Image (cartoon, rainbow, N blue to C red):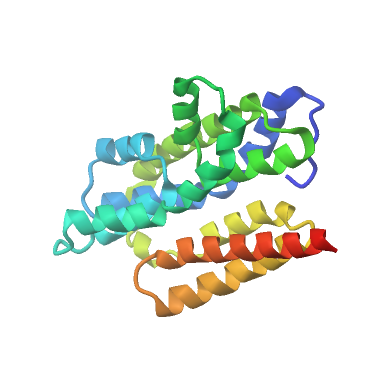
Length: 234
């Protein structure tokens, strides 16, 4: 993913960038299905969630919370909504590139806007400009891949006695680390990345829920803007 070229066109390039990532998050997608089956969700419900919600982190949190029958549905909805608040910031940064596009295209772009497709498209944009074909190809790969892998997890779920015992906590942080590294090309981006990491860790340790995700994003963005502004002033 480190080298961005368009020798085969934006769609073929998108395939070469996104397929390795969907392969890398296969264990996480399968784990989601395994956890869902273990808490009593039907295969159709799990697949429907992957198709309609299409947000791996919030889906994993939701099925984990379903382990406890005492947890109200409203709490699950609020918690997953907080996790996905980062999409507001992602949407704001993408909005200028979708200005003038038909409403249907904008709605589809919002649906496909997950961490992976956003990171790939915005990283490529710095080199070649924003390309709808690239973005939607990445989004389609992740959408169909995630849905398919949900089915794989359901099919093989009975082979694992206790999916909650699997060491899966490292998968998503490792994936996000791979996605963010190409953005760290100058001091403002490096400082923003370090700020986000430190703020997120401290927030996770001392704050309830998942507010640390949004707080880390806002603080890191502020540091990045301030540092870049200070650098341009010189």
